[in-house]
Image (cartoon, rainbow, N blue to C red; front, side):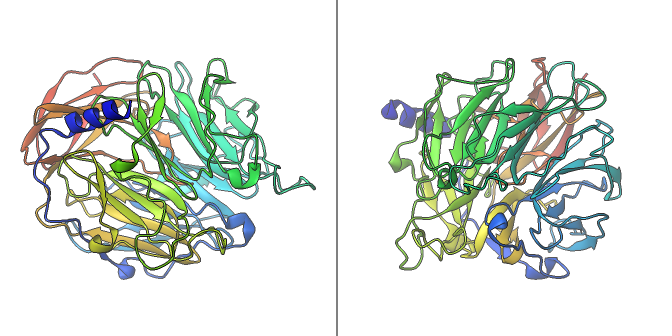
Length: 503
């Protein structure tokens, strides 16, 4: 099986353009008017997500950062095209302390991004009003906010539903007198079958979920719910989980893999159109290759396990949090960033644990470039995003840290390849086409990305789908829309953002 996987990787990498001299990022601590930190005690050992989305309609990504015991913060993007990163603070109304993370999505399909805010305590739905203003919408939408310790979120649109289906993943049940070990809370699913949400469905057993993702991983038109769970607190009996939506049931045939799961990311890296899954953990970071009927662990030689620090003399295991795929040098091959950092002062794991930047080579293998690229921070990393913040076609880096400042780094890679950003749009419900697949054909191969809400660790990105093109100066693009309608191939010149509207 592993030989076949390596063959797939080699085939998927064929035809890619030449790589740049090497990735390079420039830290810009002055991009924010004042430092922002994710703070707090044991209830904020986890969490610390960042949401990246356009909240004012100017086509520049803005930032919402969880604060833990400190207030959450919203920043409006003022970066000039191709220039230094610059953000202004935006006041937020209401109590936004206790926030573990947030995810952007257009809940009411009005064309303005909203926020699902995760908290230690009642969760909140914030309706976007434009110009980076928000109003409370939790009660208006009928969502039971609960009072749990929420650490994971994902959403999808089910056929015919006017509202998205929302999943909230809860961690340890703080009210259990026998906890915290083996006291994992139940997770909750809310279906949008009416103008208001119905009572939640319990997703059990709960194994202390830290990341969740709805994905049509087999590309059969049926998204399923994947959960990554933290063995630190379920201790025994738990495992990674996969649930069907109709009926809502755990798949009994799913392999019972147990790990200290922190984050999830998905991306097709073999070129077969099916998304692989990256799961972060304490110790090994586990890349699973999609076989179409399930997943198999990537071979160690592929270079993605990143199980120990690559700098310094601390040989204890690493702690991975948010994994993010993205083509940082636009060579046509997706790379992988992993935010790393000790939970707090856990003696079994490395204290000085640099973030990873794993660059994918032409043979499908990944090589560490974090130190050379300038992103080897040893702060306690949590949330992260790779996103073009200054409209130059290069993916910049946002990293949220526990008890250390939020970091913004501008991508200044020289000799990077060409690129495209695709923005699918459809009328009516789900205007951002969550659940669609964007396919691009260039250099003799086809690559695909699914539009999802969820994954990461306590935060995510809503925005254009980014592809590196290497030496290719144009590509053909098509969208396979939610529900399965296949759009036509369209020729698109490189180095632009293109909106594709569903007929």
